[in-house]
Image 1 (cartoon, rainbow, N blue to C red):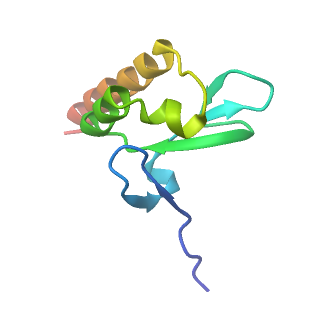
Image 2: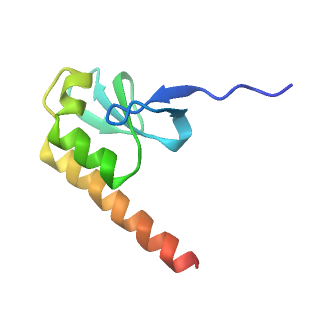
Length: 92
């Protein structure tokens, strides 16, 4: 019996994808913002430069989480994106 994938919508491009393919940004219940783990209100984002730029430009993460998202969180996501590209080029 196969399990159906759990789908989530990217806040930038609005595309439905399996949640394992997306980055999860969380407004933690105890306060603050977290990435990938924790309990609280979540927003999902495609791991692409286009979606990251769109989310930053239109403040999509702030709107989805209903709080301010620090620039350090966006910078961390950008670093993940560039390090992921570096790993992909090394694998070739």
